[in-house]
Length: 233
Image 1 (cartoon, one colour):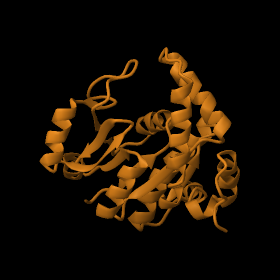
Image 2 (cartoon, helix red, strand yellow):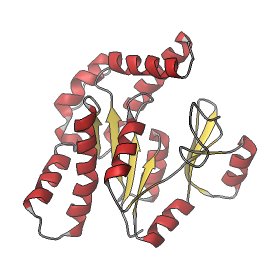
Image 3 (tube, one colour):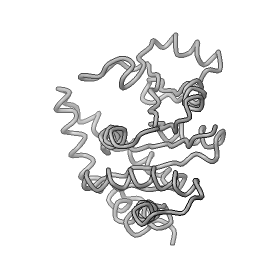
Image 4 (cartoon, helix red, strand yellow):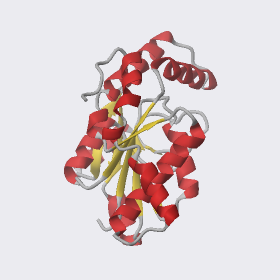
């Protein structure tokens, strides 16, 4: 693949979709992969925009046909990325952004080790719970069991943050959008090998501040809120 493959993952409720939508408005030459799923649409979601909504039998037929770059069963529903999106982006000379879970990230990284992976963290467990409750309220759903299940799933997903290249803490939306923008542009600049202007150097510096090895202290308090061990020093 001639372009850059970006992977972004996050626990449900971390604000990843908002970040991705903002990034797509700002950055040209970046295609967004629309995944396939067997879960029903939520709220105002439309087929072909947020996801390709298909039946379980259709999804399993695609599995048998080896049509997926990655796929996973999450809460009883399949999610997957078709191999064709890589070929199509490559033919158009564009970079590609995959919005996938931690299982998918591991599958893709094994196949495309040069891919750039970004993990979005909530600022705390309490904030994540608040966001989940707001989302469920907007979906007219009230269930403490679903809240508990999603928080437990978030904790398990967060355990996988060491696998990622960049860590983005989505505390203040505008700053998080700027950082995500800088990561994408910074990777393009770093790989271009060309001399950088002062503004381009600033993008690269902002991106480098989000590299996982530089985020240890900021990650520490988030892990503590989930009663998880601190990051290694």
